Length: 71
Image (cartoon, rainbow, N blue to C red; front, top):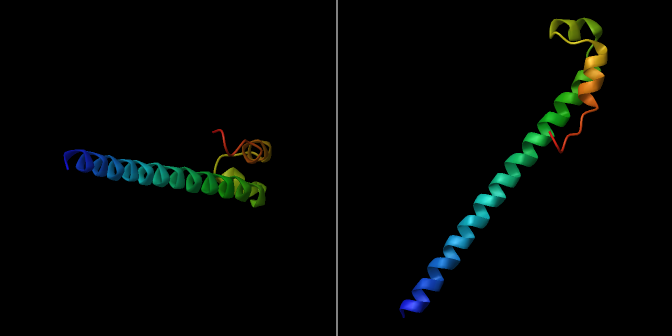
């Protein structure tokens, strides 16, 4: 009986760890998608709008060209 209880508790802990890992992965994925969308949006701004946010056209292109996965 004690051994069964031990294994049941371990299974619950591993399921909890899996859920935590899954949630963390989902958050990373969502943050990646938001960054990607935001960087592409920079390319659609006019030079005047870019100036308003303190960027030049070349800085916007450089930002949009960054790797989405590794930063």
